[in-house]
Image: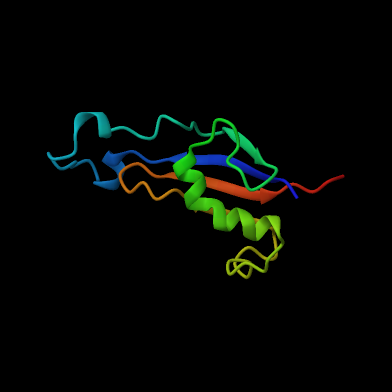
Length: 107
């Protein structure tokens, strides 16, 4: 079952640090992720990272993609009223990206 991945939000270090970014953070690391833009969509047909998707982010969210792909009963299902969807982020603590992952049903 294909899984659709949508970029929902990118967060900049100024948001993480509430505007007071520590001086030891290099200038080139003071921006939101430039790899993904809000609204980008990708489809994961298999267990491989989709073309153009950040490999590190895919490694971070792969377990949740597998849960949806194999229709495993996810721990978050009770909060989302049975919908096969989840919101998950990569683990970049300075500039995380939030993704919506959902099952794509064949018509």
